Length: 228
Ligand code: DX5
Ligand code: ZN
Image 1 (cartoon, rainbow, N blue to C red):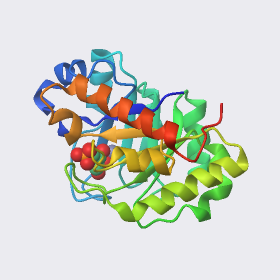
Image 2: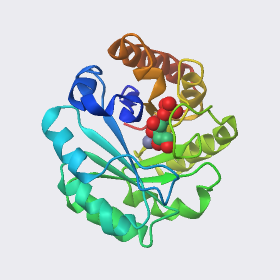
Image 3: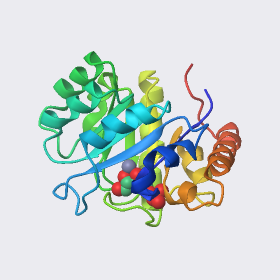
């Protein structure tokens, strides 16, 4: 499978979301950042917007929930038709139960880690998941600088997936751009969120294609091999 690009609408014009989805036609996912002003110091959008967006675009929705109490709220995003639902492990009370619930509702279950949260304590949970999201900025805002300090964790996560023969996707979110995407692909990432690098470009759809091609070339040179 080739690398996937998930443009973040956090950097789009919220008054024109249907057109902004159309502007990234060809993207693998549309990344929807849900923030509650408690888990992170910012407030964005929630379920009604996701429900409307679901009707306005064919691109599958990749909902990233930066919220407290995902055990209570996340299943509703799966019911709303999100293709992938990501909760933060720092906020989840019962991540295994939640992942199973998301899968039973037909969504891909994904778990996110902030930059300082280690992956190792969650090794045994990995088979319960379809994707792990490693944040490469502190969650809350678009347009921040990529944190190189997370690269060793990306490598270790890829090694864990290899060791267990797991086909989970490894998503990177924050500061992904033409300058940083190759480092992420080399370390083992295969799904790339990009907000400002896509919506800040003159031609967002072309930016998606260019990022994917850069990631593909870097993955071919990389020391790891994706299962399947
Ligand atoms: C940050 C969000 C990201 C953000 C990425 O908390 O989770 O998805 O939109 O934006 P860029 O790509 O500009 O760093
Ligand atoms: Zn995000």
